[in-house]
Length: 315
Image (cartoon, rainbow, N blue to C red; front, side, top):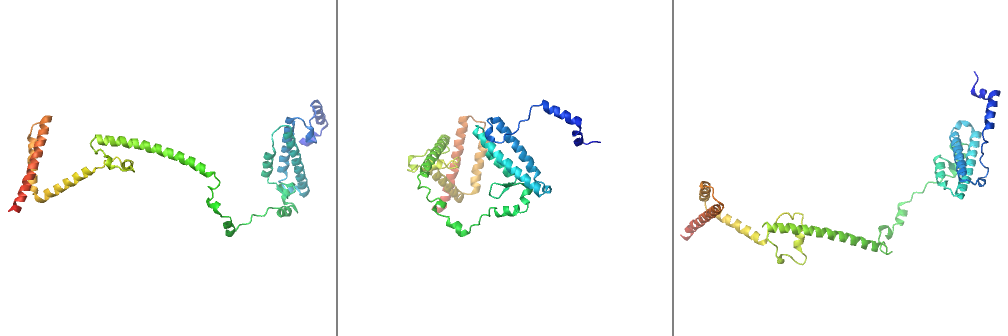
């Protein structure tokens, strides 16, 4: 059974292929010089064709079993195509097209090409050829020397700490503008909070939970306004008069516990509760009178206890 290569060499097949080639338009060949091309689209076409050839040859040169001579020839062909590609890229720019050089440089770097500094590049297995490996090692960039701590401290100056940032006259105007913006925002927030505090204070005063502040309670620094901005401002603060009344009431209770007996006090309180429980459902005016009478009764009991406690002393 004949193979495909043998079939292609048969007289009939060669005749049919020649007839097809005669009927087809002649193939357009790439110009030898890029300067001979005057069409931008064709210049882009020839550049793409060169890139395709370079890709195929770079993939082929990765095989180290090709032999030293074949690898050297492939590497020379790749470098020749790269030079031709650069000519076409310059011609594309001259014709008003885009600059492909940065993208092409990135593509070549991704292939892992190595250079000895002369512009000639080595691809794939060509980097391991005899003499090439030593040449690349000689022209390899030395690693950066590690600086000592003393050398690092030599570069530390006032500029490193930002001590002379204000001397150029650039930072100060920017700081003033930023300070004005922050101050404006802070004042707006304070005014809003002050209005809310005034509303809350007015509600507390209207409900009788807090006395109206006098002008004497505030000083030049506005301590009352500072108190209103306290996070616990929802708690009603007692005035000086209220504190005095609380202390007086506490002292009265201590004196009543000291000079009266618990049994007598309990008897008077029980009598007042029984009187309130036996009374019919009063009207609003009657309930106020009953409340006043019970309070008078308790006051009378208290006065009686004080008199009883004072008689032994007089005796």
